[in-house]
Length: 64
Image 1 (cartoon, helix red, strand yellow):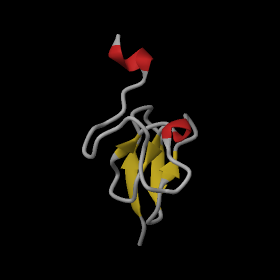
Image 2: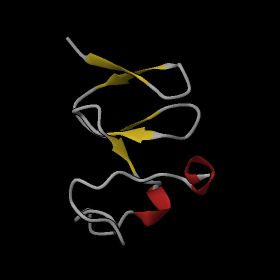
Image 3: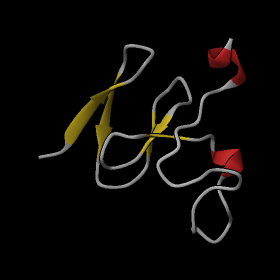
Image 4: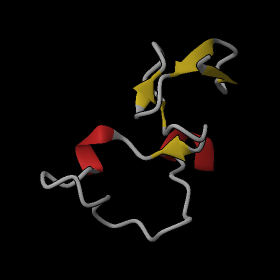
């Protein structure tokens, strides 16, 4: 059975075992952890540009 995650926008995201994106644009990994925006992802699938392991991305709107 697939896990679900309640997105910050209130919608439910089904986690199928790989990275999933809510219709609001927020992305989550298979463990339900929020990911940075896809534009920051590296092309080789090796992680994110400009993010350290364990660090969560906060959009500029969320930092205000």
